[in-house]
Amino acid sequence: MQRLFSMFPPGGPGFGLLLLRISVAATFVFIVTNQTAFSFIHPLFVGALLVSLCLTIGALTPYLSFVVCVYALVNLFGASSRLDELLFASLMLNAAALALLGPGAYSVDARLFGRRVVVVPPPKNPGQF
Image: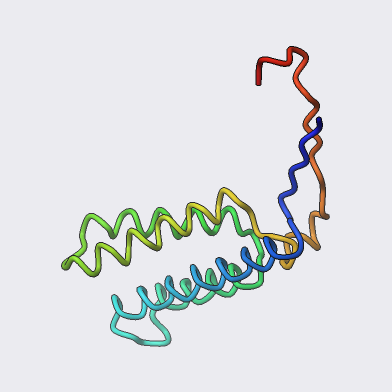
């Protein structure tokens, strides 16, 4: 029995990854907005907007999700309240999941790199993985 894996799954899983990308991007902008002095010209705010826009459309998703995950991890240790800790932990876990799962079929990455399917052949010895 062959197993098929795709970095750009269509249908329900692809739509779920789209929602996860939007969720991570919105949470990231929300956190950065509350941490800075909310100036539209603040470099951190502009960077967060660019990262969030790229995540939303699905461009360079694994790399930018890793950046967001590291940002949340660093800020998790400096959180001032329990609610902030939960927010950073949630962002970190969602960004890590997104980095590992990939962007999905409804993304710029799927258009740029093509939708590939990896076929994993069955093991030679039936009792081993």
